[in-house]
Image (cartoon, rainbow, N blue to C red; front, side):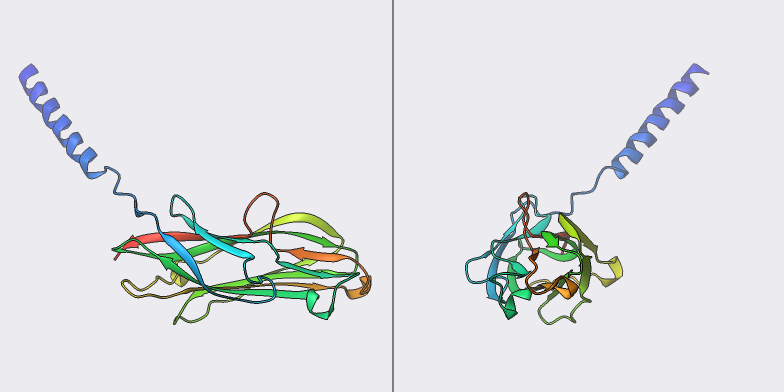
Length: 211
């Protein structure tokens, strides 16, 4: 009997080891080689030359955009064009060989100061060159408001578009800030800024797969 039990135990152990091998974690779906990104074109009143910078995070999880002069405002010293600022970036994301990526969502950060009667708007859109433009995501702020903010956007899996394997497709990012003085009056100081004292203005989340 003990021999039968021993044989049964050995078989069970062998079966368990096979299962363990089958359930071992798959290779992480992130390239080990660092991806790179560069700005091909930059346009818009919100990102004058030299005021926007881009980078890929060290773990290849996101494209990071930093702004240093992205500010819409009303009040003393502001002109008619200052109430609306926009930025259009065309980015070349250079991926490791054999990989492609999609954008699964984004996070935008900034600061808003609005007095009573004023409103603000932040909106964004991102898509690949040659692909259908995605929906515009937006958020409205109502005065009084005085705080840093963070806006998270997630793209449903069914709507995520993958960069074509082996083909160069620029990643287009369009953003806008707008301030309306409303009943606060044109002399009231209202501000919408796409930046933060702590983190970059925008982060675009990456998901990877092998071609």
